[in-house]
Image 1 (cartoon, rainbow, N blue to C red):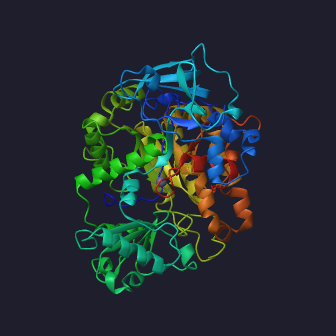
Image 2 (spheres, helix red, strand yellow):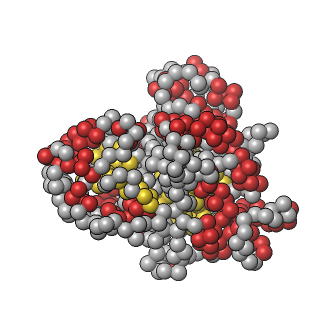
Image 3 (cartoon, rainbow, N blue to C red):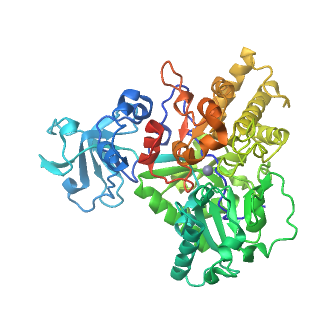
Length: 588
Ligand SMILES: [Zn+2]
């Protein structure tokens, strides 16, 4: 039902599965040996351990001044080293005044590493006896030769993992019309025309123009229409499909509309706020006519995305929407030795919110061994993605009023948003996947969607304790034994709520009690600030929305695990901007 390359609504990444309670916000240890060896990212701030970086207000308090560029210079330099070659060990060795943080529990800090002459992987990590002893704050931004090795400013840390992103869609975005920040419908048309000029032949029935990034907040809050896209003679008759910035709505040209049935059918969980705009489940209408790119094009989306992600210091991604077709592309790239990105995949059934495990076209039989050890071995020996998580959806997004709220929208009291499925269906599907041993990651933005997702996960986990899947939510959760049992299954399965964006304090407390993991994208708080207040009103915004640090226990800043990501291409994958948003609620 979903088109193969449709830009999809925000979905969920997945956290390192072996993490134990009380672990820090970012924990890369599970992937040690995987992350190291691809890209080295350098902190220009000594000792900015990522945990303290986000959780310690004393650290973050010092970072609140300056713009993003200054902040980046103060904190981290994103100095990418591709690895030296040849026999000269000195040239292949990188020493950092601030040290080299490794993923080895026993041997965490060193000063230098040497890359292998051929592959750029780590040959040696060590601390020389004769290294300089210089305080990090005084290092200069120029290379300095001291003793035997070349010393660099900053601290080298292992490559980053983004906890929630969409790799194929990011690659597609990079190769399509960029509409982010387009200040008017005219500006959208101008960018589309510019794209067509550079891509002759784009816009035909076989080769639609695709784009992403528009936001009606820039069009005086008015949703555009199909006719707006044909208002320029140069665009008349062209097949154009442009996704909203949150990828929860798409904007079709009249040529695309002409393919659709008339009148348009009602799609449960979808809506069409203006002629030519399709939101959430309704997006399947235009996408069902979208001529899918061939596998060569799709593979190039993946490799384009991969190289951009590496340029941000990202070595691994929890890919939040991986249908079977994308899994095959990943596997083929890995087999051809072209996949340097490590991928933790969340499977998405071709029919959204379904249980498709038994369909061999969905989950290949050889992929059904969920043992973590097996999966890690498989990844290390083949480069194929890890696959033991499934992605489900509870609602849409706030900007398009698709987020399901408990109370009506403040700026449109006629609606409370849309649940994409009934709570009963979501609970049943969630329970089926949990009973099959899969990690379930549910997209939820609104406070109603979060409640429904939480109910589904708790019910699913509890079914493992009682051996029966009760349809009620968590009426008996004050039973300590049940809660302990749920926690223990959750410790193994690590179910997640993706976005956890607007959640009541009482549900947040239930989430913490059951150790369910929130998966957060701090930059959403920045991007949504244009309309969050008008959509939610001051009380709801204050009590329930974008509560990032409150997912930590106040007494000691620990948690059961918090996943952080960017949700690229909805947001930039820039890790620094994400940390900036997490710490300071701003990115610039
Ligand atoms: Zn997403």
